[in-house]
Length: 154
Image (tube, rainbow, N blue to C red; front, side):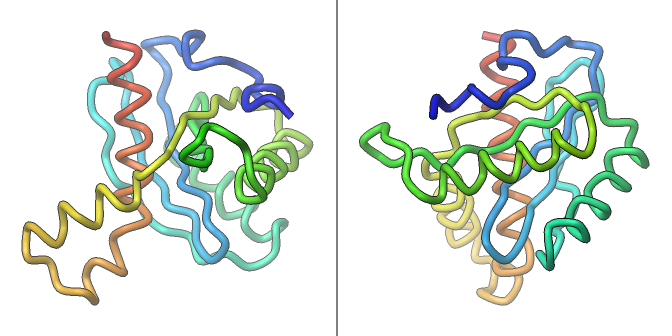
């Protein structure tokens, strides 16, 4: 399946006046980040502990509504060789399930090495292992969203 086959929009179709929410979808958590209109800076928001899809979607959509989010940018865990493995397919299915519940624009963004980059930066900043574990997912979501924002402003 093509990486953007499920997307309602491509990153190029994101409009500058939209409020965006970035997602780092993992097996155990979903990291969230926000970008306000103007789309210059991604800000870490929070981490959702995964349960079942229905509960995850309910929590996510409550935050989407609370923050007046116009579109989602979901990190797509493409393999280093550019292929799509099981994790990529899992995230695409998560997005398809979201779209089945609500018609919200979704764009995928390549998230290769996002968690590693964020973890490396926190280690360099001497953040404790406990604090890294609590923050890594929402910071990875901000890293993913910032990559999409930087692309839009290139």
